[in-house]
Length: 186
Image (cartoon, helix red, strand yellow):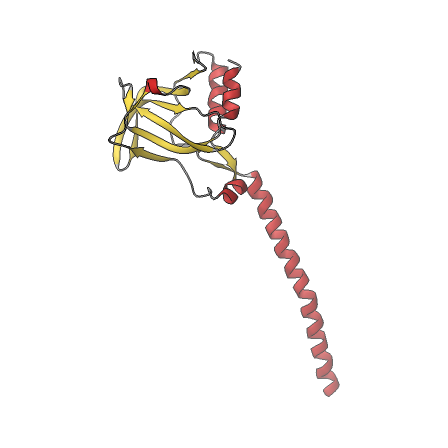
């Protein structure tokens, strides 16, 4: 009888020794798969604005309005891609929960002429957005372009119909280096 109990304890010990590596390898596999998936999925900081009817670009002292459908589509795609980064990078940079945030600064007025390089998203009809619990109507969103090659905070100014100054803007994160490269080819 003593022999049977002794043998059972040895078998339990052998089972535990085999089970620990299996659990460890399973956890490593799950972590590896999660890392690969997060590296493939993009996080977008793009504000929730409708597709514009026209895009105008003002950069390097020149202004360009998109009349060609292919140029419009390419500009719009480069603009949208500027707000993306891999989810794993966003996680490690502490930006995974960040998103676009609308703001209103009563005492700060930004005029269109004070922005040196920008993309203007123009709409044929009035658009509406809620910023700090207040509805705001606009027909132009002006994206202030930066020349940085990394993701940085950017402002998208919202202009009411017929105005050239505003206190409303959306703050988000973007990297416009690829968009600036495309604009240089226009």
